[in-house]
Image (cartoon, rainbow, N blue to C red; front, top):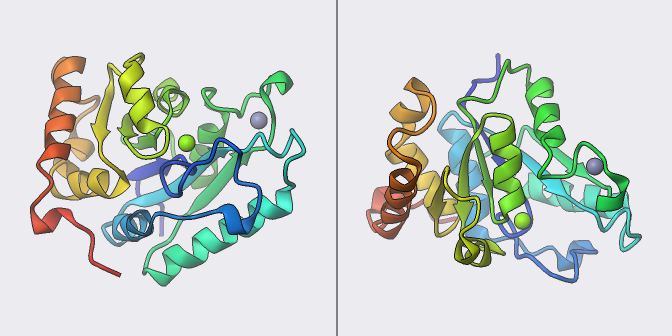
Length: 222
Ligand SMILES: [Mg+2]
Ligand SMILES: [Zn+2]
């Protein structure tokens, strides 16, 4: 079965799991948000392909090795599969800024890898969801629509306000997914970039996020 071009790419830390300024250096330090696991499963059950793109410079800095990253991603996959969903691709950048690689976000290398592995011609119908500006920049650099979540570093990113002209803003991943599945599907399939001025698009996203009380907007409880 071909991969549907309905793709959501997620940052990991601060979107799927609690973030840490001290890096997430072991499986024990990786604490997922239960609502995010359910939201990922909910996306895949609704015909969306889900991928994860994460900067893990702690590898290059020597704080943990790639076996730790692999173990965390194995647990993430198991949790999502246990909730009835699937993550199609997880890619990460192990470098630090001084390496000047092409994969570390805000560069688009990780997203190019996802695009190519899924055999997609482009990511124009895809979403990049993150809590940091560099996530949104990586997505926008390759033509994705972008969504900021207020978990992790998201509130700080929103407060700085810089570079958010094209991003919709949501309280968390579950709120974004509820909006995407219930309110935005036709838009995301039928048109190119979000309609309206960038400011209007952001206000709309914010107000939709604020009115997420409909039961339809919540993923099923696990
Ligand atoms: Mg993050
Ligand atoms: Zn890299």
